[in-house]
Length: 251
Image (tube, rainbow, N blue to C red; front, side, top):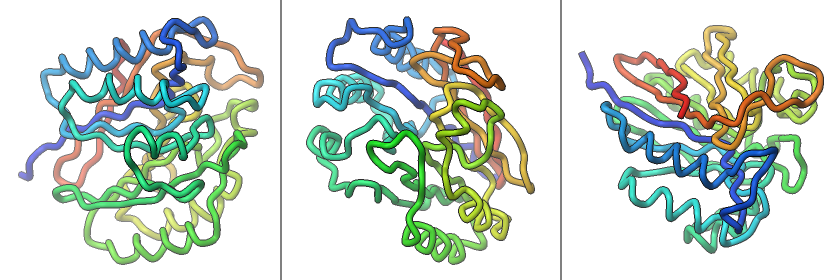
C-alpha cells in the first residue's frame, strides 16, 4: 500500500484591502482567517494547500498581502491560481511570481501523482476560456503522463453546475477541454472554484468537483443568484493507491 497524501483546496477568498469590509454580508478576511485556523488544527496534516482563484475582490496589493500573511504561518507549501477577480500583475509583485496574464499554467509531479494547473481566466471578464495554445500544451503534456494519475486544477467550471446565473460565467470552450479529459483515463479529478457552492459529479469516469468558497455560499441549482450561508468551507483531499477522495469541511 502506498503512502496517503493529504491536500487542502481553498477557493474564492475575495479579500479586500480593508480587513473590515464585507461581501454579500460576509467578512471575507475573518472567514479566511477562521479557515486557515481550521486547517492548522486538522489531525491529518495536509502536505499542500491549493488555492483556486478569486483571491482578491478589489485587485489591491494589500488584499494579496493579507492572503500571504494568513498563509505563511501554516508553514505548508501553497500553490495559487488566479480567478476572474484577480490581477496577475499585482499578484506578481506581492508573491514574487513571473506570471503572464491569462497564461498562468504550470504542472509538477507530486509523489505518485501529477498536478496540472490551468488558467481559465480572461481578465477582466467573468467567464472563462482557454486559448488554443493552452489546450495544445495541455493535451501534449497529459499525453506524456499516461502512467501516472493526474489531477487538474482550474478556476472556472468546465461542466454545468445547474445554476443558470453562474453557468453563464463558465468555461466557454469547455467542450474542447473535456474532450482532452475524456481521452485520458489517467485523469482522476478536475477541481475548480468560482461557483460558491459544492458540486460533485462523476462524468465519464472523472470526478468533477468544486470547493466551497471561504467568503460565502450561494443556493445551488437555482436560476438566480441567492446567498445561502456565510459559513466558510474548504475541501480536504486524500490521495492513496491511485485513488482520489475528498470531503467538505465547514468552518
